[in-house]
Image (tube, rainbow, N blue to C red; front, side, top):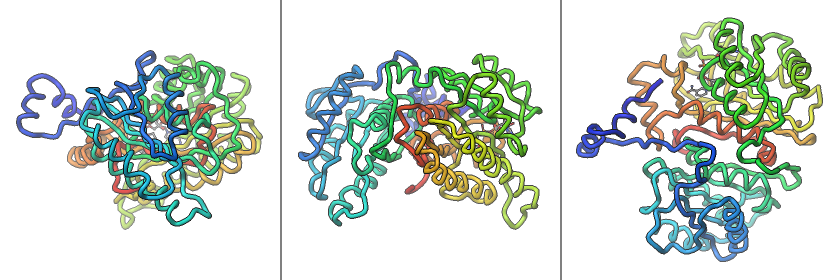
Amino acid sequence: MTDRYTQAVNSGFTKTLATRLGLPRPALLRRYRAGDPLTVGPVLVLSDGASKADADELAQVLLGWDVDVRREPSGDHRWGAVLLVLTEAAQPTDVAEPVLAAGSVLRRLAGNGRVVTVSRAAADGDSPALAATRNGVDGFLRSVAKELRAGATGNGVVLNDGVAVSHPSALATLRFFLSAKSAYVDGQLLPVGGADTAVVDGPGSWERPLAGKVAVVTGAARGIGAAIAKTLARDGATVVCVDVPAAGEGLAATANAIGGTALQLDVTAPDAGQRILDHARTRHGGLDVVVHNAGILRDKLLANMKPAQWEAVVAVNLAAQLRINETLLAAGLDGLHIVSLASTSGIAGNKGQSNYAFSKAGVIGHTRATAALLAPQGGTANAVAPGFIETDMTSSIPFATREVARRLPTLAQGGQPIDVAEAIAFLASPSATGVNGQVLRVCGQHMVGR
Ligand code: NAI
């Protein structure tokens, strides 16, 4: 589970040697610690002419977050971030000036710096020129992200029709992208809307956004699930940790470490949803967040796939989530946030994983459909699609394949469980209520295109 290469090329003699030999040097990623500054240096806010008012408004918000904000690409700074506000750009020619101004400072972007775009989604009824301009930002951002070095990332906030830049979920998304919480999120554009979403964004919403909330995490005995449970607890939630009885020791360890409770349960049990609901209500008085993390692999080429291998993967990774969600929806919980683990395999496909990719693409499908069902009561359903994450699951992959998977992403390394956990904690937080039915990849920009 350790990426020794990344550690070696960032320390002592081996760092010097790697530099001399011109070997790739994956950066040590900056990860969130309470109290650290939001960015690693000043933030340059740029916009096209028509978007200036939105840029002014965001600059004020950044000042409120104790960020050193600059509006001109001059001075001898090591920039912490470049924020490109393109919300009102209407013609392809509008974006040239701010985009090229951003380019002029990229050589002075600090390690672990950020480029974040704020733009609008192309919508039905847009003129062809407007749609072209809005969609153009997508290709621009994904390409710039691939050009950044030293752990810097590029991501975009995409406002849906009628959503103001000051929408609390737009600001929460912007803050997440600027921060070290999004260390392994790269080349992603996250839509935010609709305009009528009720969002709570109270004091302390950055440090402890889940204070007073009750969260359930399945597959919490180890790996990504344990990291999610710990991160939700760090953010203030009381956490119910679920895993199979065979993983009871790890389950108890996770629950004890965070003052949560353990529920030994196979998520494929027909009454799993009811048992989760009963446990959360009787022990903790309610249920606000459910993270469907439990998952298994049974990799085989389809030509060699046994029925049990297909069926087990679909039962744990997909059917269990559907059945549990049915119970939760029937209970009519207010403001329920569901976050499900998908995978980049469910987006791009992966050889030997037709069963797994079916289940994970299925997760993306049911997430979109469930989002619409939860929205009327202020709830959300989102999915997180990790790429290669350093866990027990991936340590079983043969060395050569593992090494290729690690070096392919733009960030040239695997992610850590905490990176997935941070994305989930963000999506589970009340201020992200305007992000609904979305898939957020945590993959270091692993795939070509989407
Ligand atoms: P892991 O194998 O380390 O942990 C999975 C946990 O789920 C284990 O504690 C296991 O006991 C539990 N579990 C399995 N079946 C269960 C059941 N029927 N009922 C209750 N608990 C059950 O896996 P890892 O790597 O932490 O992955 C977590 C999730 O992230 C999975 O859904 C996986 O598909 C997904 N993911 C992981 C990636 C990676 O690179 N590690 C990449 C993409 C997605």
